[in-house]
Image (tube, rainbow, N blue to C red):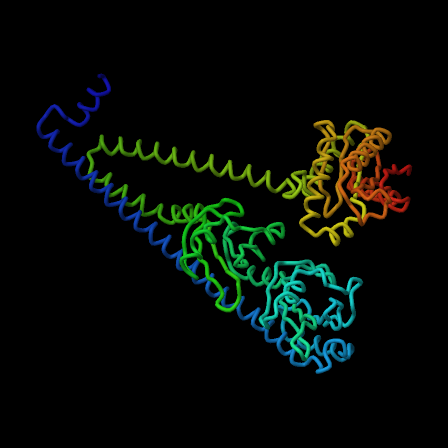
Length: 517
């Protein structure tokens, strides 16, 4: 009651003039607020509409660029097919045809390489001028496709890793026929993923804005700003494939990305000639924050105009209310940014495939551990572990199975139940590392032996292993030192563990060795 009486006295509501002025001011305030809200809403809608236009224009332009890229590759393949000798692929003069392929490749910067294979999958010519160690590609998807399908159109496959150089490439292939129309082999052009990576990096986009090229079967060929882990991921549950492409070949819409669940304003365009789609997406939360910053002067100006119509007491009340509102918005924005920052920090320190610590967290942890140990005079141990014959595993089972193998090994290492002060990390590729603070050489060697035994006991099949057990195994190297507190500690620890790991491999793998130096 006291609060109500205070407000009534401040606004002179006990008089007819006071009530009239209060009603007039209230109506004026409501009208002003409604007008400001409508104006700001229209401004936001125009910002969204502009982003939608930019997204679809970007996707259409990149669809045309992609179409030109693959059209040039197709024309090169058709030219190669026309120049295959009448006697067929088997009578190709390798030296002259290699030079011919090299000349074509030099004219097309998007190409990683050009190849010709016979009906048995044997490489007959290559733009690299020399054949790789594995020169038979009969197991590749595109080879099986052309052997099964008799049409003369090009086939664009999913991303593969080149056996010639190890690069990620998109295979563009064309069937070669003999004089009777039978299957005689395959002409192959490989388009570099790095070509799209470098080209897409030319565009000034936000850190979470997306630009991607995908197959119409919902497989990712390349997506900026994500790393190569998303390549060949299937996004068939994305609204792009469940809703939008069913209705139209190009357009725009807003949805949560199937890759990272971020809400984006998307534009998309299906290529006319090839089974590919280009999508461009603008981070909607970031767009909102940018719009809010740009609109802040308008918001303040409207508030000032409204506040100027009020009496001194109402002006003071309005200022207080605006300040409270602004503080609430800033608090919410700060909490949101803090949450996003924590999320990004967690993502930046974790390996996306195994869930273990990544290389960055490993380096930070090792540096801090060595500094602490230098003060206490206690030893620090490092175990380096490497999956035996993992390249042979990848070549035999495929890269998807290779990723699953890495995940399984990561789970086994995680279940070793080490101390909370220890760190298990994926060091890179098929290599793992365990940092053991306050641990001597003997204890570290015991843990390394446990890790090797645990992975071997997991019985993950590896028919290509040369260790003799035909299951996935580890080699481990251990090294311990008491740090001196200088910059060489980390290097010496890594070199020692790496040397021990090398000794374990030279001794036959599937074992742990501790360095005595």
